[in-house]
Image (tube, rainbow, N blue to C red; front, side):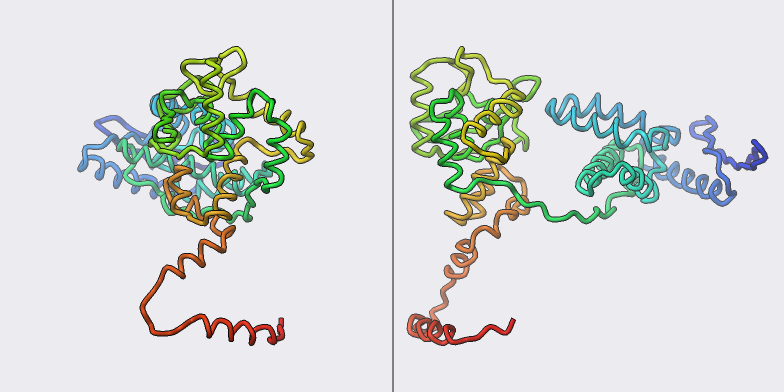
Length: 374
């Protein structure tokens, strides 16, 4: 063990050899920490040697995360995902973990990161998103054989206050439609509310994915800020039935022959701009309808899902329409439908021999005389 004296302070440093090259530890204030580093590095070196993996104890999180971002995310993911990850890395992860060795990231590192993020007054939701990105990077480090395991795999999320979904009631939908029926983008708004499609999916919808014979829309592409992508957010195709109102709007659009490629365009036939629609046009349309509270375009997706659950109550069909990977994502709307739960119970039938109707009428009479004790 090497002893280093600087500014009247004593530091300790250990060393191991990898392929004959000396690898020195960071400087520690305690001998125990230096010894623990060496013990962990020797253990990981043995595991790497046995599995033939890439052991590089000097690899920092900053170097690895930037390489992952440029060589993996930029190629495999959408431009928007790349931009979001890049922003979170630059603003939240790298200021704290830039020089931290990838092999040294532990729950203690995560707690220090959370403290730094809380000092910025970030919400628990944002902090959980940042920690989730850190876990994703470490999972890739495991797959790439740079670390034997992700030590944050079971790291718990911070508790988040329940977030209510914003959606329009039927009267608000009608009010919005009436005010914008002559707007160039009216068919697009109509489609959003009747299908629950994301803005990128709507802007990327082309005529070759609209089937007037089967009355279905195939969702296989998205329009991002960098252009049309031959994929979806979940990388899976899904099919959505067209409501008669959507069919009628599509017929008028195809008769106008603005574009042979895109369904929704500007009046000159050119593709719509993602930012202009979300940040400018949709806000204008809401003000035109007299709404004082402006919602996001993505809230039209919540509007569709909420109205679907209140009217239809079939959460499993809703999952397929929205394209959610997990039913847990769709369950956020389940509380809106009492019909969903009652229909599920009523589907059970065991031929019990009981005539339920007379008993139900009797129960109703009794319940009317019950006094609440709450």
